[in-house]
Image (cartoon, rainbow over all chains, first blue to last red; front, side, top):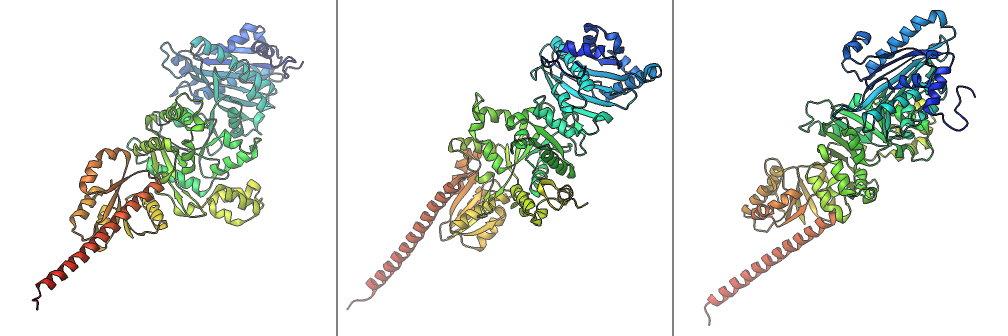
Length: 476
Length: 150
């Protein structure tokens, strides 16, 4: 059996993984851990043979020690701190050992900075973890960093789970870096999503030069390692709290296939109204375009090219993208409320509002639709509704005349009256006849009038890249 | 039949206008209470459909002015109200409103309430016509009786 393959019986357990790394003749590196003890390196000491793989193990527990080694920082459990740990330890290891064994050894540095459950149970249990490594002696290698949320209720269980993830990360980086999907899939080996959530991963460096981290974000959600992942317009993977922490959030859900004038007008209108909310005035609002997994899977088999096309078009408009598994809006709201106590707004079309009042979606809740709305509208969450124009007869459907099931009419009226649901009135009339399905049809049939239905930057990208069957490509 | 609709919300205004025109009414649209009062002073309307909460001249104030205007024909008034304002229905009725439609509204409900208003307006007009004819007949009889016989 080669070190890069899993056992015939299936995936190796944590002990086997740690041992294989220890016994690998060409791996040598440093472990640096802040908080939650030295849970990862402990595995390597426990299984034996650690002298073959470990040059040094550091636990910078006191912030003064941490600052002295890695320099000052604002937050100790942060991506910045992790990066400074990885850079310093990796450079230090290479500098110290390169001369006498650099020709035969692939060096690495593993680091984590973690906040496990405190005595009172009042803190956010999460951490950053990463490995910077050479795939072969003296190459530039790669780096994997990830953010974990520990879901166990006991500190000791969290530490244990953290140790397993760390071993999985090292094993995956060393033996599965050629198959990033396999690397991702192996991160929760011998664990479950009930214990650890991985809500952000970033692969970088020569070893991962062909990896698109947006696809990795999608896979995190697809594999169930998290229920939501985010990336910025420039493709940078984001950890949600980095973006959402203590900020008012305005989110628009859609398939964005492709993003049209209507999508952007909906966000603009909702943003204008949202900024008038007393609790939002003077604040920096975080706008998000959310795509649900169910929307991505709408056509059956996951099409990553299709996903990237939508992401590229949203990027052309400077949008931050959230991919989520939260089909139900109340679950999306709960997810966002994890990061902020500030007001949350959701922009949607009146068709989505009608669906929101469809009781079939709440049969799994003991309290049914009432429970879902109780969860959705707490913390002053507000829905901003874009109207729908029926192109056949010119009829407009809005909050004011939306028909819901008779037994829900009073509930609907109450929510409207209370201001939980607000009709947008500042929309651009000219955009009302635009429907995504028509844009797609026109692109497919070669009718150039679709270009008037989307922002010019979006049209340019569709044409240039030949997205959605556009035959004008490649123009550039 | 000529109807004045007034709502400071452009979407509500548009929906009301669209429905009423589809149902065959002649519609005049006012942007708010003050605008509605200006239009009311200039034209005759059989029915007024007014939002309650509006800047400056609220729906109840508009209806008070309509009732105090001393127009010869009765003007049927419908107030559009949010749920919480239902507690204030007494205030609306005291101001002179004839009926209420909750917001958000069902098109069918609005239509039947307008029909009810239309019936009352027509009845009132018919009665006024009959009264006028009766008065004219009575006047004619009195004149005939007063004429010297022989």
